[in-house]
Structure formats: C-alpha cells, structure tokens
Length: 204
Image 1 (cartoon, rainbow, N blue to C red):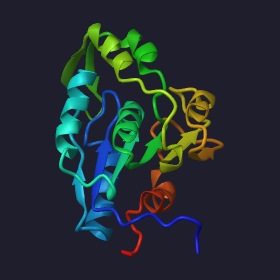
Image 2 (cartoon, rainbow, N blue to C red):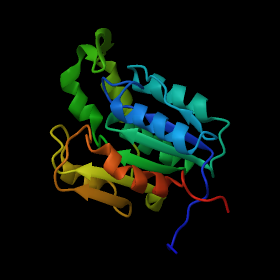
Image 3 (cartoon, rainbow, N blue to C red):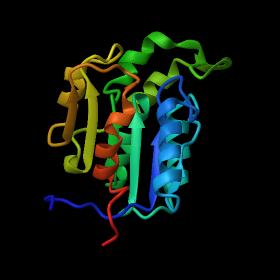
Image 4 (tube, helix red, strand yellow):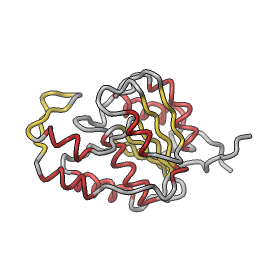
C-alpha cells in the first residue's frame, strides 16, 4: 500500500501550450484515455485564447462549479504555467509536463503573428501587452507543492530543465534523461500521471 492514495477524481482540466490546441497529441491521448478508462470523468480541454488574462478567465469560468477536492489539472508548457497558477488558487492536484517557468521572458521574442502547430492555416497575434499579463499571473512558492507532479525532460529543446526542476521544490519530479519538449513518449508516463492525479484510484 502506498503512503498516499488520492481520492478518485471527478473532473479533469487539460491545458495546452503556446501555439498549440486541444488537437495536440497529448490532449487527444488524454481524451482517448478518459474515454477508455474513466468515461464518467468530466474532461475539459479548452482552446485557450492568445491573451493570458483571457485564457485564465476562461479556465476560471470553466471550473468555477467544480469540486475542489475531486478535480485535477494537467498542463503542458505554457499550459503548465497556467496550471501552476490554477493549482495555487484551487489547491487541486496538478500534473505538469515540461512547464514554462518564466513565459513573460521567453515569449517576449514571439510578439507578432503566430500560427497553430496543429493547423498552420490558423493564425493569431501575440500582442506586446500579453507579456505583462503573463507577469501578472506569476505565483510564488506553492502552498501545497506535494499536490503537484512534474514530468521534466532533460532533452527539452525549448525550456531549461534545471530551471523547471528548481521551480518546484517539494513536488514530485519525474526527471527524464532524454526526451523532448513535446514529450513524445507521453504514453510511457500516463500510468504515473493518472495515478498521481487519482484518475484511476478506486473510490474510497
């Protein structure tokens, strides 16, 4: 028997990264996992607007009536930054995949027109004021770091793995020797992620 057995979750929020969408490989894989293993689970995987404040407002509206003790959050890259903000606000158990630590710094170089990874015909404009919005969403040390798990790849070609690890002291870190930013071997970590979140835990 493990030292901690999280309560069975009833709701899951998946937050995609910058220039991504609910059509990303990981978001789609989670949708298939839920359909196969937890069809009773309420899954939300919204298309996040370019404005960080609008994105968080949308997410807050989505989860405003969700039970805090049985909801879970998963976020990748920029979605991991949003998920960290939401984890601090809600106390929900949260899984992060190569989470952005300082997107205000990193995305300052991306001001201008951008395209969606899953469909290059979809365009959006990343405005200069969005950098300030990202700064406004930063949170300090987590109140409940034990409720957060991060899968971090040393082979991430976009983000600094040491900075990611350093951002989450006291959290469960699954540090990969290789890997990439997209976490192409996502399937290999699904069991650990879903177990940590309590998605597959037996009802108590």
